[in-house]
Image (cartoon, rainbow, N blue to C red):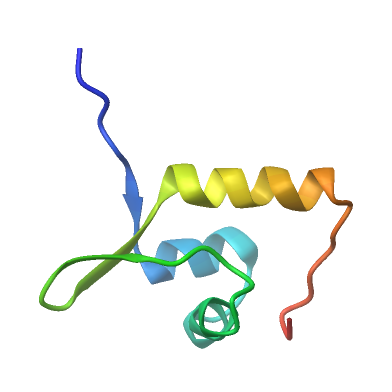
Length: 69
């Protein structure tokens, strides 16, 4: 059986954290969030596994982030 990678759109990631899409992009630009994957023209997504790993690292480090990072 092959592993299937799930991808999330910026809107889905923003909803997950209760922030705006620009905030997700700002976090990414500032290096405080996983980098997305370019799947094609106009198609940029985050691997759900990268998001989950980032969440675990935040929990392990006891880090609480604000929307301003």
